[in-house]
Image (cartoon, rainbow, N blue to C red; front, top):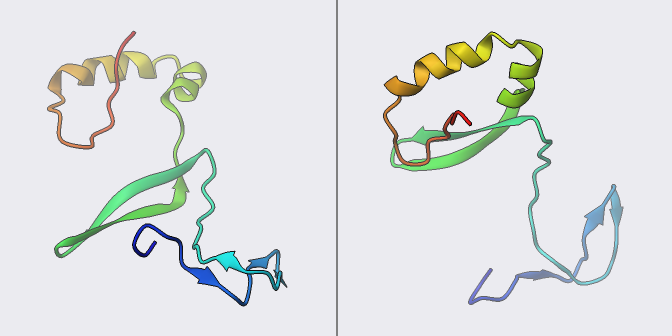
Length: 92
């Protein structure tokens, strides 16, 4: 965006390897599946998002497959000290 307006490409967009030849917004995308691990990576004074390549297993699925994990997670809950942007485990 530049002054609240998208930058445009008069060359068009590339979709599935094909050039569209119509004016299109200049965008960059990343594919993110439902199980891609998302993490913050710090490099000096800058931080950026890292998508994958590792997979993340939802705790609900893990607990369904391995019922003993719920007791282990519940035991860890009192020792957690919250930090900004920290995901949490909450017992229902």
